[in-house]
Image (cartoon, rainbow, N blue to C red; front, side):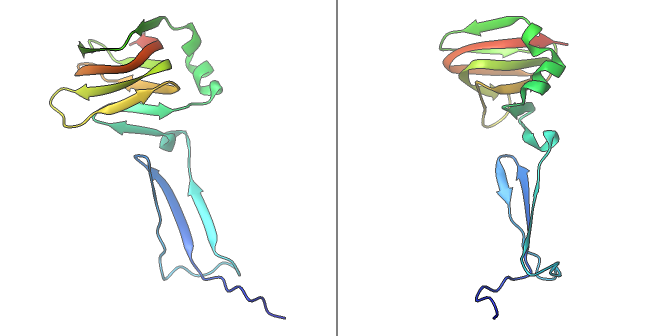
Length: 142
C-alpha cells in the first residue's frame, strides 16, 4: 500500500549569515531518495559574525575559551554608563556579565554585545560604549 505522504525533491540549505538563516529550494535539484534532504552548515567560523569592524562569537564552548587562555586574562568592569573609547591595540575580550551597545565612530548603527560573547575590537577603532547592564569581562590586548 502506498504512503499517503508524498515527498518533493527539495534540498534545503541553511546558512548562518549575520544572525539570519537563508532557505533555498533549487527546482533542478535531483531527489536523492524518497524524502527531501536537509543540510545545515555550521562551524566555528560561521558561529562568529562581524559587524561594523567588530567580530562577535556568541557563546563559544569552554574548550575554545581554554584554548585562548581566557580565564587567565586580566579582568575589567564598569557600571551602567556611556563613554568614548579608542583602541590603541587589538583587544579580545570575553564578557562574563553585562550588556553593551558599541557605536563605532563614523558608522551608522551599533553592535550589541552581552554576557557570553567573545569579542574582537580592531586596533585604531574609536567608538562609544553605552553600557546598559554592568560589565565584568576578561580582556587581552595584542
